[in-house]
Image (tube, rainbow, N blue to C red; front, side):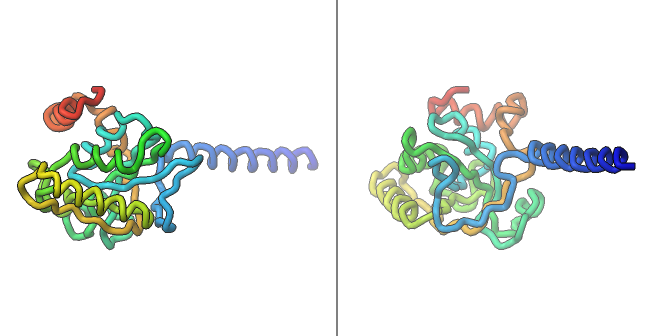
Length: 215
């Protein structure tokens, strides 16, 4: 009986470990809803930036090709609905925008450099629209993580307006990040996994080429 009891205990512990391990491995990076604690810090001295500029597939592909970027997670932020689905966000009733949350090494790429690429990667003068993608979920938005990022975003936007790059006003929202909700698994690394898809070929690839990023 002692042997059976010990064997049973071993099986239970072993099964629990397997469930925990595979449960962790099955999650994409940043799968948890993340409520910002006032600091834009990631792990291991990295920092976070959260931006929206049209379809998150596009911004994800742009920043994944950028040196100093550790990870890019597509998701939703800026609205009121908790843990929204893609279908709900597309319906326009959640208030959320499609965004990417970027983990970056500030010693390699600065937050200001990320903002510069953000401006180049989309049209910040169109309200609730990027190309053929129309709706409030495609609005241009910067969600800052702390006061330093807020000031940097405001200055960057002001400098862009003064530069005369665009003839129309820059309509990009600059707001504090509350909660970031990672999108469904199939949205993550979309360009990398679907280079032959029509949207990737006709929209994302030309954008990467224009920006001089590796294809």
